[in-house]
Structure formats: C-alpha cells, structure tokens
Image (cartoon, rainbow, N blue to C red):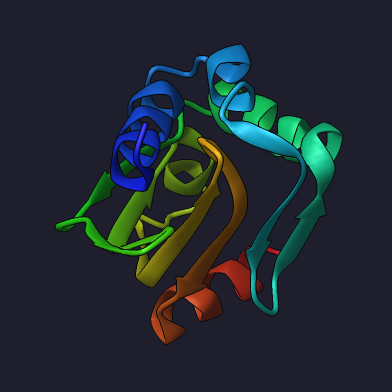
Amino acid sequence: MNPKEVTRLYLARHNAHDVDGVMALFADDALFEIPGRLVRCGKEEIRQTEEWEAAVHDRLRTGDLVQADGEVSFRAFEANDWLQAAGVTELRYTSMTVEVRDGHITHMTAALEPDSYNAMQRQG
C-alpha cells in the first residue's frame, strides 16, 4: 500500500474503534506526538492511546490528504465523548502528518491549533 492508502486505512480503522486493526498499521518503533502535549513511543504506548480513544468514541474528520514521498499531510478535526463532556465541541489540528515506510506508520505528528491547545490545557 502507498502512504495515502495506509493513512486512509488508519483513519477508517480509528473511526471504527478497531484498535487491533489500527495497531497492525504501526511499525514496532513508531512515534506519535502532539507537540507540547503528548509523546507516545512504540506500539505499546500508542495502543494505550488508541484504546482510550476507542473507549471515548473518538472521531477524526479530515481535509484533503496530500502525499509527498513517504509523508501524508492533512488538516484534522477531532471529537469524542470526553471532549464533549468537558465542553469542547471539537479539537482542530493545523496539520497532521503521517510518515509511512514499508507499508507501516513510523511517525505521526498532530499539531493543535492554538485555540484547541488552550482548550486542552484547561482540561488538564
């Protein structure tokens, strides 16, 4: 699969709360980060985040996916039960970048918009 196909599959599995399906897409030493907020190293730590997001019915919607070599970038919008209960309708990301090598996600970075970052800071 090319990087855009892997990214689309990740999004579909994430939104379906298919944790095992999502984890099959990550390299063993993958890195997931929200700069200034969260860093997850390796599949075990990423799985913990995916399990939590499945439990709170996390949903991602995206803008157009743009591929450049092994990277796919897009704007993203996130909503889930926990955010809603905390009074946050949705988080907005200025960009998400998914790096894919040999058919596996090796690095994912999600950059929160400043207003969304501030909302997350208030939630702790």
